[in-house]
Length: 207
Image (cartoon, rainbow, N blue to C red; front, side):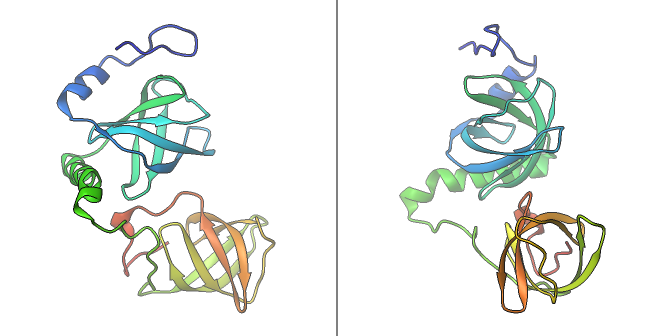
């Protein structure tokens, strides 16, 4: 079926149809966030996905050929380019190594069979303590603050620190962008701008 762009004309990059033939697409509804070339972050939801591409429902549509960094629940971080403008979103070709595509295929198979097999939801909310918890925070003003990681999840981190930047302040936790979202006794909680991918989420992680 031919998809129409916002201007009413068919839009696609020439190798997207070939990608569809190479990879079986699975209908999947996963929440996520994506970042376009302007480095702004937007929410999205998948419509269907294969190891080679994904179709998203979203409000902000990039240009054909524009680079996208995408994070999806239970899949992790993906990179690619926009190849098509279906209604209410865009389709993205995933740029990945053959090994990464195999991993995506396994994840999609797990997601497709999770409900029928009664498998758990995954480790979206799992938290861990890194082997090296010391970290430096950099505020928008350029000021540096010493902190210690209490625990970390793929979406955020709890930090022990004597400073309390205002809620909403953008910070760098090591080299990872985030923003302050809560206070607790002896520290702060920060949410990452782009969640950590599952392959980086382990005790040896360095932010």
